[in-house]
Length: 275
Image (cartoon, rainbow, N blue to C red):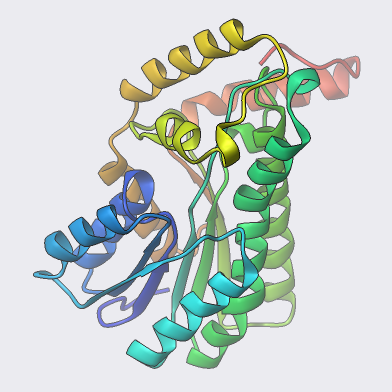
């Protein structure tokens, strides 16, 4: 998708982290923005920061609720008349062994991480196609390609996002749609996803057991994230991929060697390599 200046981008989970990095990159490209988040406080900061650079609409949205995603679309169209780009980016994750994950946490993580992008496609695709040109991208993870330990629900949701966007891209191209799709599979990025996930976990639920080990895992994940790529750099990578109609968006392509090892093991002896 070229000539982005003046086009309208909708970003969920845009109040911080990768979503805010995308918003900044798109603003630099001259796009008008609809930034959605679960919390009003970061949205106010987005309006203050980016409102001086481009036209910005902020909207509170829980992407796990179809009616709220529809409300986001309605607000975007009412303000700007059309939408050209959707970034389904909102996400959560709690490090817990699969056998200890509560069903309520399974549902919450999959509702946000997978149903959010599904609702995004269902609601926004007709609007973007009506605009005559556009793009839909969703934030998955390397966890959507390699299922590591203690992140079962997150892995399942992110694998689903990869499958959703791959299916969509093939279908769009097959029917010669003016819309393209892509999937972002980031490695460690310096965001507060761990803290935010704990904060918004429904009912402040705790794991059924293994709490201390999961707590250490969460601390280790957060430490790794704090050493990760700056979100603004991710935003620029996403912008370039959209401009070039690229499907796969990787922040750490060197980690693809692990994907190759997994494929080699699959072909060689049907084993699963250690992630």
